[in-house]
Length: 75
Image (cartoon, rainbow, N blue to C red; front, side, top):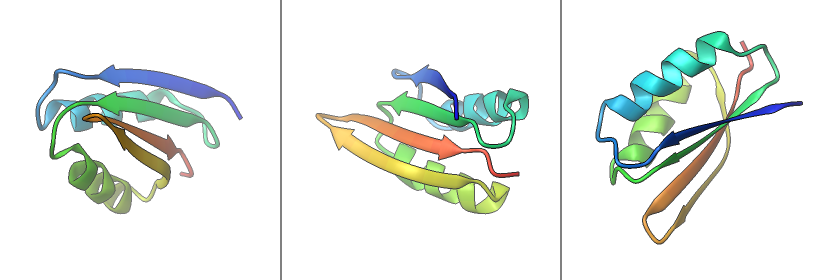
């Protein structure tokens, strides 16, 4: 399984989700997208997005305000 990185630090809602949507369209099934963001609402936004888009949030961490989400494309 390969991985693609997406830096969304410094972007506010809805831009991280817009960038995730665009990036995921380009990925093959089984590929993961690792997203870093600094928007305080990013966790709630990404959790809602993966539910709506039927994707898988494989991990989420928050270290000193920098959040990292790993999303696997499953469909």
